[in-house]
Structures are given as C-alpha cells and as structure tokens.
Image (cartoon, rainbow, N blue to C red; front, side, top):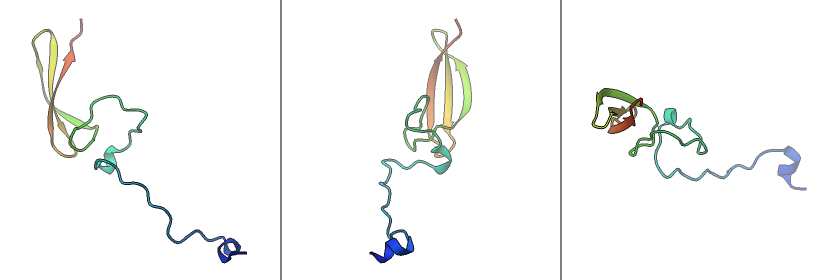
Length: 83
C-alpha cells in the first residue's frame, strides 16, 4: 500500500484552475455564466453601473449615461420609452 492511502492525506500540489480570459473584480463576479443578461462593462466585465444622467432622446427613447463602478468607464445606453 502507498503511504498516502494509509494516512488519508491529500496530494501536496493540487491542480490550479485555468486563468480567466479577462480580469473581473471579485465583487462583480457574482453573476454565473448561465445568467448573462443585461449590461456588462467592455473593459473589466463588471455588471454594476452608476447612472450619471438621463435625457429624452429622438423617437421617444431614453438616453442614459452610465459609469462602471469598478473601472470608471462611461457608456451611453438607449432604452425604449413607455408606449
């Protein structure tokens, strides 16, 4: 018998997980891969934003200027208004 089997110890060097393709802050990594709806920051992958301002746009749409809470990147989104 092997000594490890007798003592019940785990191997000393467990395999390390593969690195992620893009760096995501720990606070923002709560969303699972299966639930990928909504806005995501193109720079850091965070899904949390501050709305800086809201305006009415052409065609009854709503323009919102947003800022990523993690990296500070600013995005403009257009939403459909209530019809």
